Length: 320
Image (tube, rainbow, N blue to C red; front, side, top):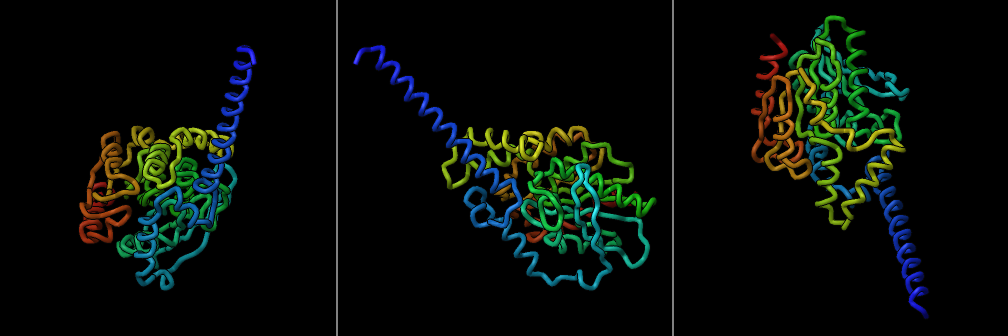
């Protein structure tokens, strides 16, 4: 075999190897996309890629509490999203006519019912409540999870719904985890003046960085470049990129007073992210770290401090 033929064969097998790796990478990236960003009930398989243990702990601990919803005046409503999806929300009205409203937004792969117990303290303090199902979750339409990016515009639609129902309304946005990232990204939009403040609990600084972090700590050995392919697939299928869902970029534009809350031992959305968010927020702001709390458990670890801080913040920016 002459040298020319050896080089030709070497080039052929190298191209074949590159093609094989490319096909394997795209196939596996699409599988990751399907699991983590498309509507799914396969939570067991999802946990191969994301550490959902803390999320399950949150839901189980709050759902173990006695529900109070069945005694309240509530109704099911639907609105249309900016792109034509039918979005579901649970509305809990006060028995008397009050103008105070709070939109309470759930986390990744959850639903509005996860937030019932978070809503109780707002209800006790004369707030009407809207608990939306984010797109791709619960009773809302959507084949994909928006990671807060498209959801930010859905929150604007919920604000519009409140203002049609109550022209004298004053509104608080409250969110947990992905819900917290959602309302922070909403703050970068042009919100009406009656949105008085934002309370966020354990938001990530960007969807891309959160998934990078999750892939780094995953027990599965996933090449780092895979996230870039997932980002590309997301852009084609969901019409947004994970890198678009950058909370930091949005809060730089925010003028709405914001309280940042995070657990000091959060391993799902690392605590360092809240300091990056706080530093970049251009609005009036405050921050509280609950030292021994993990992801989304600050209200469980120190309930008194959690809610007293929230209502002190509201006294300053909402009630005045």
